[in-house]
Every structure is written in structure tokens, then in C-alpha cells.
Amino acid sequence: MNAIQIYGGKRLQGQTRIQGSKNAVLPILAATLLIDGTCEIENCPNISDVRHMIRLLESMCCKIERQGQTVKVHTGQLSHCDMPSDSVCVMRSSIMLLGALLARIGSVSMQYPGGCVIGSRPIDLHLQGLRKMGVTIEEKEDGFYAETKALVGTYHRLPFVSVGATENLLLAAVLAKGDTIIENAAREPEISALCEFLIKAGAKIEGAGTSRLVIHGVEKLYPITYRIPADRIVAGTYLAACLCSGGEIFLKEAPCIQMQSIIRVAEEMGAILEESKDGLLVICYERRKALSKLQTDSYPGFPTDIQSAFLTALTVADGRSIMEETIFENRFRIVPELQKMGANIQVQKNVVIIDGTERLQGALIQAEELRGGAALVLAGAMADGVTTVTNCHFIERGYEDICFDLQKLGIRCQKIDYPVTDI
Ligand code: EPZ
Image 1 (cartoon, rainbow, N blue to C red):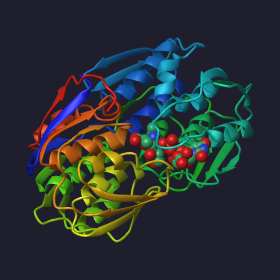
Image 2 (image 1 turned 90 degrees about the horizontal axis):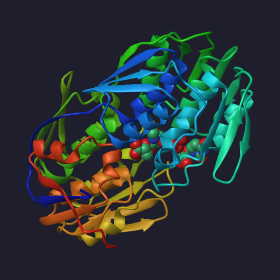
Image 3 (image 1 turned 60 degrees about the horizontal axis):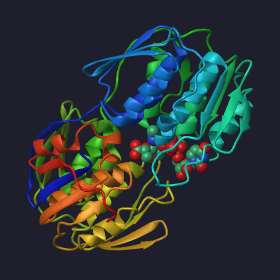
């Protein structure tokens, strides 16, 4: 089934559990390649990006077994491989395999990674950093061949914050000869989770969660069991659903500590939020307030991955809001779809001006990427009438079952087969 149909206009009421983090589990699955033996990854979300990552690991003769929410990865027979291009090209995080594979087997041949249409998504920082660590990289039209006799620790200063480049260099450094320093490293919680996993497996890393990582190369890492933390972006998406539709919801296991910038903005919009060790209570009964200026930023700033969901909520806020996207160059792709529903939005390069209207009207709209697709489902939930969001495979990259979760929060929605036609 390729679409989601939503019967909108109702306030939210209910609770749902937040799944494990996509952006934490993907680099950690790549990190298992550094370990000879079997690692157990608990609370592993069953999403299509994880299924693609597992397929890539299996193409390298890893043995993978999923038992419920636990995935066991056995890398003992790791060997050279031709990674299936459809799995490499469907997601950005296939590039995470580069650093780990170079550390383990010394050479990699792969296509350029794929990912959402939200920006050009180059990998220049990844390749520059690896070259500095003793890797020769021959770039071709659709991919590259990378090889090293031995990875050597070195000093990196990233020119700007990059989550993926930080993760790739970290994975290359943990078994390298000597020390590696990464200045201006990304501080996202997903990187702290990766550091926690690697340290538990025997790596020597200082500065996790800060912008300066110091890695002392070690000889070997050891198999471990690790529990993936809850997904702060999924939790932020459902928090935004309450900002859109109003009501009262509880998000079980929401990682409140990692959501402070999202919580602050929601409070500015008039929501009442109560944080606890069990999760996050969200209450919205008054019409939401507009935001004079909201800017995305790297962590601990307001996350770009939540931008579309909050943009959607602001379409029915009381007044004019201005939002600036500072991380990706093309992340307002949902605007034309929201305009079909009656939203009043102007786009000026990387800034949107949103004039809040009373209500949106249900419509036939299409997802073009992961987080924008999820935001369109939220738009359908708050709109009058019926909304159909097509191309829901994009949403399944990062949400285990958005329909199930939103039904638990009181929204009437279902997956349907929609005739594949250009809209
Ligand atoms: C990670 O992408 C996340 N993906 C993204 O989440 C997230 O939006 C992003 O970090 C920012 O937080 C995963 O973790 C799998 P970056 P990544 O490198 O690593 C530019 C989602 O919806 N750049 O921090 O690709 C890049 O183009 C996804 O879950 C270079 O120019 O993000 C972007 O403009 C979407 N050269 C900026 O840096 C490089 O070599 C930040 O990108 C690398 C990045």
C-alpha cells in the first residue's frame, strides 16, 4: 500500500511509545563491522532504512538475525563485497560503512550514497578526512574505490558541523594507529550514542557530546549488547501533531533531555509540556501562537529534521511566523502541498513566511521525502475532511508505523492502495 488516508479535524487524545532512533542505530550497525563476533542491538526500530542497512551488511557475509526489537549482527565472516546499489543509493547512511570497512578490511568500492532530495548532500568532508588518515580514494562517475594499508590517527578541523562526517571519521579512528582529534565535531545525541557503543566495546574516546573528540586508537574491539535510545525526531514529530490538532497526549519513553530546543519552541507556541523519566506530556487547548523567528541549527539548536512538522503547525497559528532553514538548501518541499490545503506560505530562498489561517482543508497531496512526508500526515490530521498522502514509502524510511502511532493518539487514519498517477 502506497498511501495514507487521514480523516482530519479531531483533537488528539491518547499515548504512544516512541521507537528506537533511526539516526542512532544506522551508524551503530555500521560500527558492528569493527567488531569480530556477534553484537546484540536492542530496541532496533523496524524501518526500511534499517532493512537496507542490514541488506548491505549481509552482502558482506555478515549474519543478521532479528528477534523482535533485537537485531544480532555476526561479522566473523566479513569479506569484500559488491554492495547492492539499490540499497546504497536509497539512503544517505550507506556512507557510514566507509570508515568502518576501511578500518576492518582496508578497501571499499561503492556507489555514491543516496538520501532525500532536501539538498545536494555531498561527501567531500568524509573523503577529505579519510585521505588525511592514509586512505587513497579514486573517484569515478557514479562511485569511488577507497583503499588503505593502515589508517593513521590525525588532526581534523571540520569547516562546519557535519553529523555524518563526524561519525565516519570516528569509525575510522577507533582502530587507527595513534590519536585522532576532531575539532568542530557534531554534538547530536546520535553521536553520543555511537561513542557510548564504541566505548562499551573497548574504544578510547574522550569528549563525547562536545565539539572536540579525542580518539586513542586501540588494537581490537569486543562484541557487546547495546540498547538504542528513543528517537527524539519521532517524538518531536508527534509533539508537533499535538501543536497542529490540539488535545492532550503522552509520548512514552520520549528522550526529553535531548528535546530541550523542541520543547522550548513548543512552549513559545503556547503548549504546556511536562517532562518525566517515563516520557513527555503535551497539552494544547488554546490556538497556537505564531513565532516571530525560528531558525534551525545543529545540536543543541532546533533540529532541521523537525522543521517541516513545526512549519505545518504554524500554518494554523494565530499570526505571522518566520522560519529559516540553515542546514539544507532545499527543505521546504512540502510548501506547495500545504498550499493545496489552503495554507498561506511564501518561500524566499531559505526563509518561509507563514500567515496562520483558521483551518486547512483535506486534499490529495504527495510526499517527496521522509520528514516532509510525516509532516503532511500531520497536516491531514488537523485539516477538515479527508486527506490522502501518496508515496508513503518515504515515511516508512524513518517511522515504524506512523498510522499505528497516530491511531493511538486518536487520529483516524489508514494505509491504502492509491492508483499510481502523477498528481
Ligand atoms: C544527518 O545527515 C541525519 N541523517 C539527517 O537526518 C540530519 O538532518 C542531518 O544529519 C543534520 O542533523 C542521519 O543521521 C542518517 P550533515 P547528514 O553531514 O550526516 C553538508 C533524517 O530525516 N555536508 O550534518 O547527511 C550537507 O549537505 C535525516 O533523519 C557537506 O557539504 O548531515 C548539509 O548541508 C535527513 N559535505 C550539511 O553539511 C559533507 O561532506 C549538514 O549535513 C557532509 C555534509
